[in-house]
Image (cartoon, rainbow, N blue to C red; front, side, top):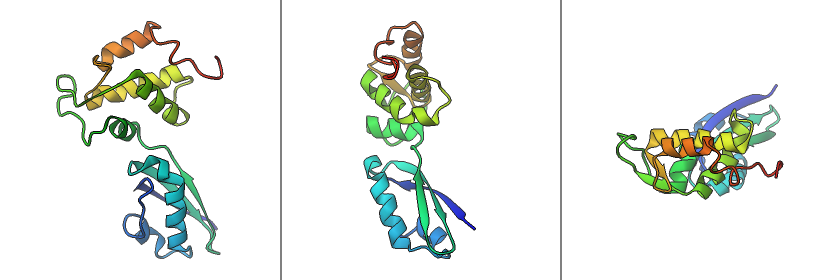
Amino acid sequence: MADTIEVLVPGGQVDPGPPLGPELGPTPVDVQAVVQEINDQTEAFDGTEVPVTVEYEEDGSFEIEVGVPPTAELIKDEAGFETGSGEPHEEFVADLSVDQIKQIAEQKHPDLLSYDLKNAAKEVVGTCVSLGVTIEGNDPREFKQRIDEGEYDDQFADEAAA
């Protein structure tokens, strides 16, 4: 019978300590092998919190599924700040480019409810609102309105549709 462990770990920087080690300790898996595989699969996220699911069997075999980090983590990593603004509608902590918004939307799209990249980008922009992050110097709410008006349709066209 397979059992599952779900943890949030720093991409590419997992070690046998908490939060993973104590969860894996009582299981039949080789903890070092699990740690190494998680680090290999998450190295692209370099320190960003990544959700990981480890499914293991009684014989010690295991499978690892790496999720996509939360949108806020991707934004913080891309913009280079630690915490969002305490007053996100008045004080802004960072600024992103349209290309950075598109990159984050492409990373998150499989995990979001949106049907296309344009709507995925709008979800990312919504997170920018709550963190206090501007987009090319503009309030993210104004930027979202410009997306709705079609100003960025070329940038956010799905590759499959293009």
